[in-house]
Image (cartoon, rainbow, N blue to C red; front, top):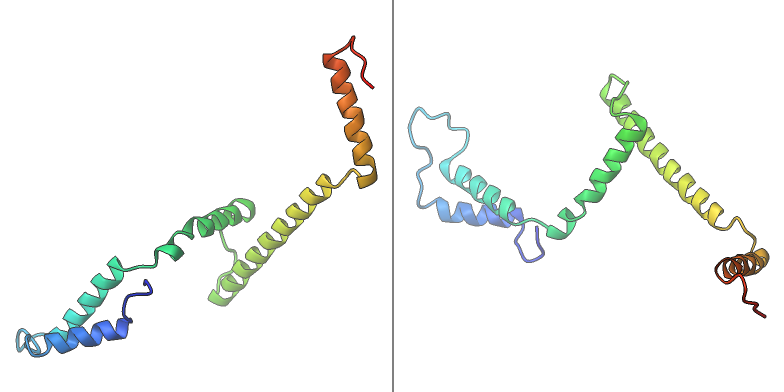
Length: 144
C-alpha cells in the first residue's frame, strides 16, 4: 500500500462503523450466520481498497525476482526430489545458495580475466597494439 493510505484495520473499522446502522445483521433467518452483513461489506471494501491501492515501487522490482527464478530453474532444474515439506524447503534453500555461489564465482572469473595482463605490461601491450594498427593502415608512413 502507498504511504498515504490507511492501515487495513482502520479501513475495516470505518466500514463497519458506517455499515452497522444501515444494514441488518442477516438477510434471512435461515442464512448460515457465519458473518454479519456489515462484516461482509467491510471485507469487500478492504478487498477493493487493497486491489486498487498497491505499492508500485515494490511491484516494479518483480522482473528481477522472476529472472532469478528462471535462472535457478534453467541451471538446476525445476523439480524438487524431496517429499516432505521441510525437506523441500531445505532443497530450495540449497538451490538458492548454490545459485548465489555460482554468481559470485562467475563475477570473480570475469574480473580475473579482465586483470589477466599485469599492470606494468599493459602500457607495453597497448603500445605494441597501437604500433601494429598504425603499420597496418599506414604502411609507408613512419612515426616517431
